[in-house]
Image 1 (cartoon, one colour):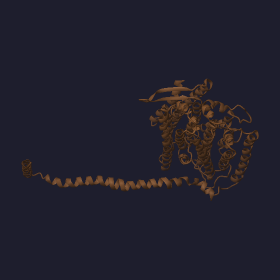
Image 2: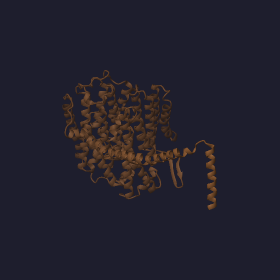
Image 3: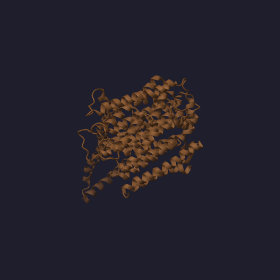
Image 4: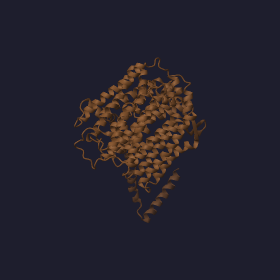
Length: 630
């Protein structure tokens, strides 16, 4: 088992090094195959470990070497494989494999395809370190590694300056969150004298609820999660991350980077449940982010940015679940979301591929007959994310909505309204792209064509998963067996034991209401969207509050005014006043003084021997006279 665990890191790293070092010599078609084979082997190993942890019900600790050992400080480089990390292994390697295969077709004509696949393998490698790390410092290495990988992939087409700006924006905003994470790590080590995740959880479970140290630590960790998982106010980088190739968007949004914050809090569940203040902060931030992201998505016109703000909203929904203490519910929705969000991004990529790179939905329309397979797959993803049974999103959302209603009716209604926003922006996207008559201004460079099979087959697999994955846990109305909750119960047993159960469970009538009412509203919203967008010849320009939403609540403009411009002004001031005027002036003055003195003193070098003898005589006389006086 130890060898298998180590090989999980070896294969993607080996793929990155092989393709990266030999990219100039390697055949363009070979890099995608090698990268995909590396992740396929990893997926097979992950499936084996997944079965092992279920059958044995053991936590597998794999020490590799002593990383930091000084005095009383001992931090090993070790891996931990339990039910939570095994689940993440299946998601990262499974969805990652499908995205790798899809990319073979999508990136076929790109001149830097070898570099692209090297970066993809690197991304998977660092995400696996994050997932498998047995301590917070190793988790932080993976955390920073996925940040680096996202920077490289978002700015992959670096010849376009806008892509470079998007990559820098993602990198810098994540550094803000990472500072909070790093401070949390320092406080954890200072408090517990270890960074082992399991040891810290054991020691923290003995502390009382509301302990100030735990509150500060969890708030710091949450700041890190806010950056990586794009929560308000550190969320504006995620929509700009669409500058990278579409498979990168799918990988970031579905299987890797943005799930890291959810994983961190779920992995540290014991710490968080002992800090009610932090749990409430997570709940509020998640709720606001889910609402803002959903509202913005309704009025976007870039097909990828609609899905990007959808991810922001869904991540907020996941943080709401965490704030409510529904850790297994959050992980359940994270799992199903990985399937249908990857499907939607890859289907969007298929649309973009068919339209020669066009991303503006106002110029699209009537594509259901021209790219029927992509259309069918997009429908599956749309229905799944909207929470319509029997697709996966319905079952995972139902768990979170139930937790919200157990917290209180107001919270339940609010969570339901947020989930209904998904229906609005997703069916708007579906109807505009595939049903509405094509925009009169759009003339594709080539005829509209269906994507190759190497792109369609991975999407088909994701469509199957988006359809069937929810059946691992049926609502309590239909089954007492909660498969997903039972699977993760050993992981969250301590955390769940520290949380007081609701005094009164939901009545059967309330559960039926939660089940039926949203479906009725969804049906009305779908009908309205069809009437509103299919029959419209053109999308009308946004006005009033719609313009505010279309302009994303002016978050970027506000940040630019509050932070970017003042920092730019200070940078210019210090460059002119301090650097060029004072520092350069001082250095230049010394240089000019030296030149001035040199010009004067060089006149003594006449080349006349007689003059030199006279100077020598006078010098000797001056020395003798000086000695006599003293």
